[in-house]
Length: 170
Image (tube, rainbow, N blue to C red):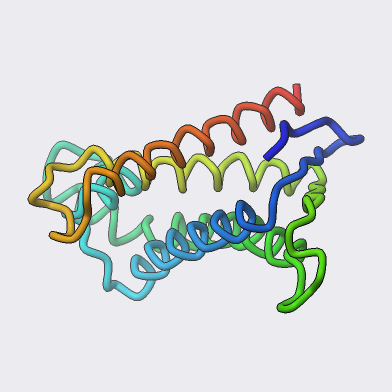
């Protein structure tokens, strides 16, 4: 991925199809976390969910009531934001069997899209950061140290993408 550049009120960047596909996949996975909140399937004691939906009150009863009332709206807003990023990425990806499947893709976002991307990159980054920092016994048994190291590299890459987008918008 190349740095984001200002383009009018928005920004543009170039990325490889594999990068765009990976980011769209990660975005879809985080979307599922938010959909689980709306469908009341979310495990709120999961460290990722605790970071995405932190307790607003010290009292367990007040915190539960706040979550019950506010979490669906928060999740719906986050779903809309993440969907924007995923749709932008999917629209840029070449069709199956396209000869240009290794050419850099051009991603262009307007000001509203840039805001959605900044927020979405932050959420995906947060989820991966929390997962890679969890105790080993909280992770699936087949997750290796190499897997964790690769995910940390992705967290760094997402930080680069988010930082250059913010810089382009200044």
